[in-house]
Image (cartoon, rainbow, N blue to C red; front, top):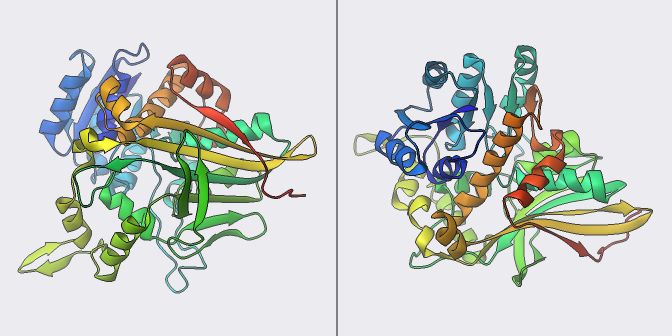
Length: 408
């Protein structure tokens, strides 16, 4: 497989390095707006006969299409911030090649009732093009990172093997991860962090469809495994809620994240003074987006791996019925920050996110996964994916839990 990797940041670097020496990879073009970064990642990934670097402006679909054609790639792997997602998505389509990303197109809150009704939902811009992709005979695999991505595969696995009737699919992310030595730092892009944490969170219910609540709503104490224990989680806007119901018959789908009270208050302060805004304002004759200023002042997540300690846990809680009896399970993946740096030289969240598209590319290259149109991870058989986790020794587990409520 020949791949155009767009974006050589924290996750792009992980994808390149984890793809190295895989037999399915014939060629990977590492591209980034910062050419020096693309060149460094390509050089560190391995053999120059396999890896090469290019400069790209991901906001320009024609540049994406041009590079895809120039190198005759089979797939465009999108590893840039979601604000540039649509041009990369469109560029792959224009080039007539397959596409993969780890997020989906951005949402826009409802203009008059944002904390009750959805506006433009996550992924709407991409799913609106599903017919065109299918007619062209090409695949756009969307949301194929860690979460969304592996979290969705866990949901599909549970629906296929563990339940006769699925009631709820609840993504719960947390752990004991910390970044030492910084007053404020994020484990992934601050731009994306602000976007998903301050937008109205979405919930799915079979009888209501998609609806929204206020940011950080309905806090709950979730008991995380691996010795972490109970941690408070809150509603956050996330792709799984928009993907899971398209392929899995469930009564309810939610996403909650363990952010911590101090982190939440920082985000609320940024919002209160307008530093989360994406539109440009004029400051002393210069136009600048406030959110970009925050991003420039916040440590680059790619540089803080040595300062990260603790466990990052991403998992999918599923409830329902098996043989007429209530059942609850938590399927999860855990990565240790210091172990990940020792073994892979990668920041833990970059590693967690990056290994998933690498596995998905292998399944596509080998023909174990096939499809046309715009599809999420749930649209594919989860079994080959779980088998690859085991083959590569990637830790994952299933925990049986006592159902909180005997739903009927």
